[in-house]
Image (cartoon, rainbow, N blue to C red; front, side):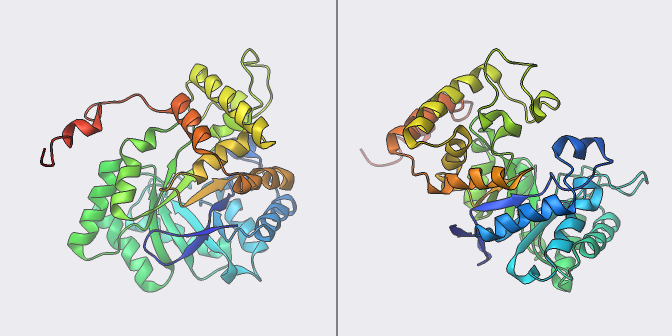
Length: 339
């Protein structure tokens, strides 16, 4: 297992992170779609991850309606300080008017609840799970800074923002003398490269860590979805089409991945994950799993070294169509230097 710095924190995290959206929540319809693993099953996956060298676990208060955090807390009681735990806040956690969002009231309450469920006195990385249009950035960033100062949180990050929102938050933090976001969690896959337009350039500019959720596009890049079997194949995507995928282009990408997988005597998902590990901006790729063997197979991507030619083939079939103002990025710099 390789380890990379999380932005400029000096903290080293494994290049694969264990995602725990599949843990807990058997009475919650959404969690049931994800897996709703109970303590015994989920603990086996955590142990498998730790044995493979993973030192980074990602969860959220909303996963399994809190049960994901409870499972992690129970499993890691004797190993807490060996693991970097990331959780999130922002989604609805109850029917009350203020049991959602990024107000000071909600964030503080949910951090206290997360600490209790995780059986710990600190959270390594607290991430805002989504933007909140009702709460001003000054309010959000001040309470996050207070939590870091208090020792209840070590670092803060964000997820699911637009590029301009990341910059606005960081500029606000700098202006007020508050701690800045150290990482950003984004959807990014070979059938969803939109993060390359604004998010990844911002992450590079701001020297932030980049954590990838749904690297296999909700199962589309597992290779089990074959053209002509729509509505027949089993799996989560047949019940929950998320993240959205341009299916026809997706099948073209799968064709290239299958060819490269044969060359490496590997699998389609391993090649899709290996491609992400080859992207310089990526700090850690979040892997979810329902079974230890599924996690074990995906971790095999770390051993795959794609050739330059293979990377070009993958890029050609999956690249984004140019959009203004980057129809031709060189057009703005070609005459910048003396002739």
